[in-house]
Amino acid sequence: MSLRDTAKGVAVRAGLLGVVGLIAGAWLFGVAAKTASALVKFIVGLILLAIGAGLATLEVKKIQRRFDTP
Image (cartoon, rainbow, N blue to C red; front, side, top):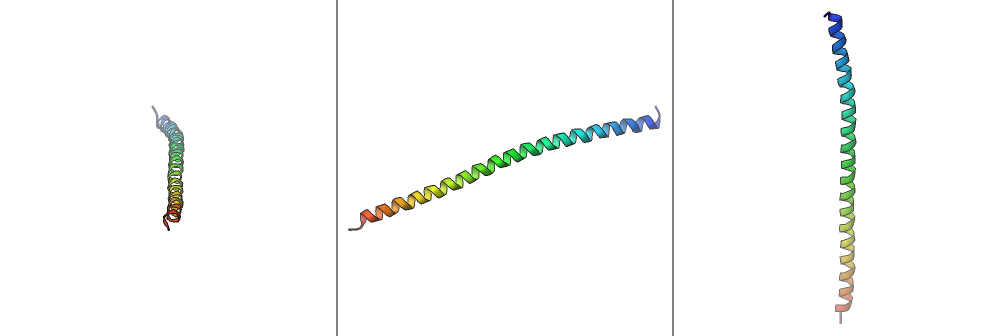
């Protein structure tokens, strides 16, 4: 086995490893992005739900005050 054959083998392995690493990294980034997107949507939904519940509570308190005054 010559030095040229060894260099070719190393170059081929490095190329394959680079391509596989790029594909795996892109896939992992895609999964992470989808997870982050779902998490952000969930948190925004919770915030909107809390705001809606707060507004509903304020309206109920207003109505109660109106009926409590003589």
